[in-house]
Picture 1 (cartoon, rainbow, N blue to C red):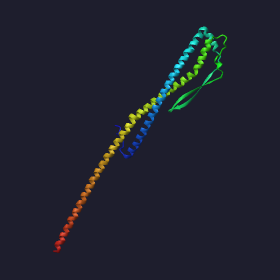
Picture 2 (picture 1 turned 135 degrees about the horizontal axis):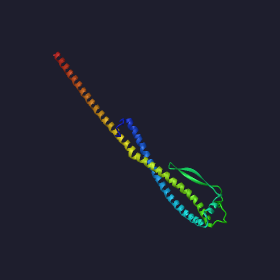
Picture 3 (picture 1 turned 120 degrees about the vertical axis):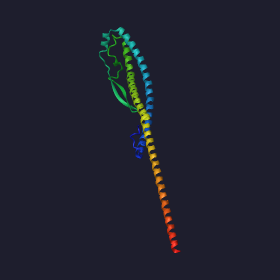
Picture 4 (picture 1 turned 180 degrees about the horizontal axis):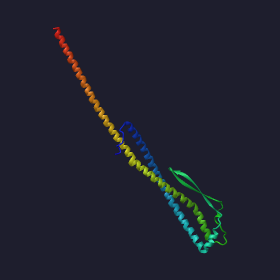
Length: 235
């Protein structure tokens, strides 16, 4: 039983009431956090779906161009054309706080600013479809980075929503009912003790009144007896 080890005192009652107030306030804050996380999570999921569709469509176009290029060139020729790269990219990773969730922010840094540096070969012995494939893949890169960022954000937010949901349920179904039960138990015990003390005081009061009445009657009887003896002596 949850109330088995509870000390039914007013100090314990005050302490539990403070904890109950704190638990209810925390429950409300966590529910608000969970609701806001859910709202932002759904927005992120919709954005993720939109970017993924765009990336898949662009990848399909790039694959089509690459398939045509491979049909016009041998694998060795394509490997030689791609051997020396003029352009390179590095990824800068930072974080931002979204409802206590640290989500990553990716930023691409390119070696050169010249857009023509994506081509690592001359144009004399390569078909235009290879150029189109490389250009399409280069255009997809920002969307791929954005897709990776939004998917990681969704994963982290889903994990935080699950943790927040468990905390809300623990407060709502375990801690708050436990505090309320203990408070009812202590209140009942204190009321019972107060009623017992009141009953004892009433009994003591009745006994004192009864004693006072008996003493008064005894004094009156003694006075009447003395008065009667004095009257007899005078006659």
